[in-house]
Length: 204
Image (cartoon, rainbow, N blue to C red; front, top):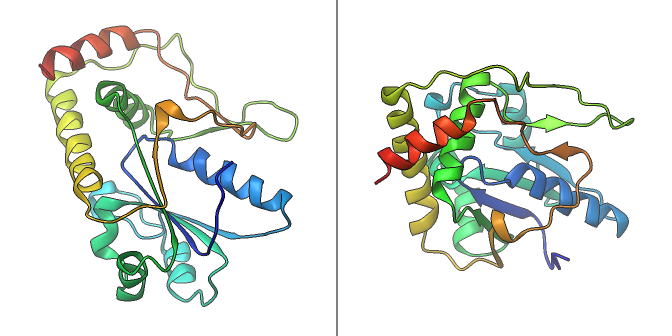
């Protein structure tokens, strides 16, 4: 499906674009072909993201082979070591970009994930949800906070949109038919339509 032709694989994204499930789909596809890869999911994060994984950071920095998938936000590339940046600019990796066409839905997804502090939903081996959002719960509808979310998403999108690199695959969330049974779409709270309407008004 993805026709990966060289390694490592580097996936550049913005927030809430489906990059995690894309990694899983690619990894599962390659496993079926007998290729096992190490996965690094945003091992180096901007401090403002408030999630810094020091163990994975150090493991990634010291990893010497090219049999891996790196997923990171383009916004955070400035934090990465020179050899990774050189690999991207020289295209000595398989380079993928994933974005969203519907920015308002992207902002809605970010707002919900930020409020409930859950950024991914997974099935266990028996298909039972490990983490479940109480969809009867109403989330906060705060104009100042939603405005911050809009600016945050647009800031991350600007970098991934304007990056001057030729990609091996240039993907959009809306076009992909994700195969992963390991992950599911994030459930929406009962008042998600109200949040959507506020985002729509503020984005005009």
